[in-house]
Image (cartoon, rainbow, N blue to C red; front, side, top):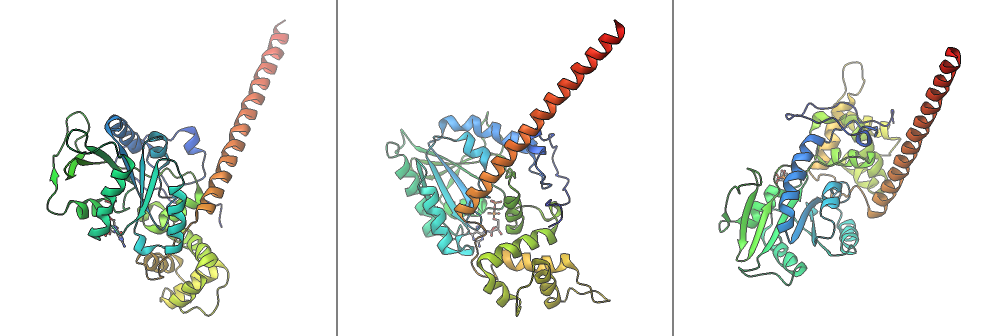
Length: 344
Ligand code: GDP
């Protein structure tokens, strides 16, 4: 598919730092706003020493790609609760697989949730308490930090948890203006992450999955490319659903499928050509609304394979850069010797 890049870069409403060499070396044109992440990193680092449990909200449809690697680095060793939110939109079998994957990690518990349903959301408190049984009560309250990439459902979950009883203590000096401490029950404090954790997209497939899920602003990617990748994923595990939803008798190659979706949804222009971005909008809109059924875009095994391939690619590029540097040095010293010879 094309040169493997997601086209078009958005102009974010905040200042953006220059990506580091490692970041900019990836051929991924979706931006992950390093400047913004830096602010969030600082705020989280300040709060972390007083935190007992870190809750990371993940999107159950993409529980690997919606995880934040920066957070993982920063919170290593802290008891963790992974909440696979929007499980009502995800494939139940794969949600179980992902829960097992996360539960196998040390000091980690994991639950699936639909953030708008109050009863199960409250289970989150018990899960956190189970992670730190030595804490509780007013003297040693359980202090929990909740994090998640935009649009994963953090506000919805907090509102569900808070109900009418919660007390917001508002801003705390010395942290940031937007951090909130929420008293969920006696001896249980929830700290809302200040700032936002953007996904750090280094794996191309994760970029496509994040874009398909709606986690990334629509101006930040080429909808047709994302739709083509979504079609490829759906064909692997949910081909029948795709056929049923768009009354497709058969599935040809990915572009033919997108074109057929366009025809079904009246995206033809005069002359008969299909407007692929309209066809893509139709597919992405239906997917995000759950109209194709409960679909998960990735398995733990696929994610592990993407990470492995990415690490290999990074190592290859680093070796290439080193080799270029060495060749450059050699050329320069050759020139110096030559000019030294001329002078003598
Ligand atoms: P935030 O940016 O993480 O605070 O995300 P929001 O709480 O604003 O939620 C983003 C969108 O996802 C909203 O349209 C919510 O209604 C929706 N949403 C949140 N949680 C769930 C869930 O568990 N299931 C479904 N289907 N939608 C959800």
